[in-house]
Length: 168
Image (cartoon, rainbow, N blue to C red):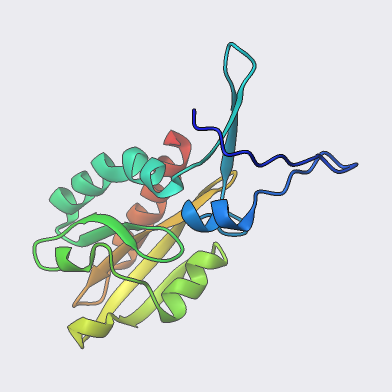
């Protein structure tokens, strides 16, 4: 462990302020989940938790099976970007930012069914998105298609989002 020489005191409510320089260096923003661990020697470690990685780990097998079965493009998203997915033609959107109504619905943890525009693809796609939410972990299972998504496929997608949430 590297000694930094910075000493902070707890306030009356037990809060500790992480210095701005450390937050900048570690890219920690307000609202980011942090985990506090205690080692055997009593040292405490604070580290940022990558909730996106947990979501991908819990849902990647299901996304792959959905793609194989329904032949639709499925993606796992956090509130900002497409994290992973299965698609023959749309894999290039993995890692790109989500915008518009889809982004809003994911941030508000609500279902979304409608048309979306993926900016650099310059084409409207049909989309349905169902929240994946457990405690502080939230995101969505999203299906994207050039054709209207049938009601039964939307129901399967909704069920799969619940299964992913239960696997977290």
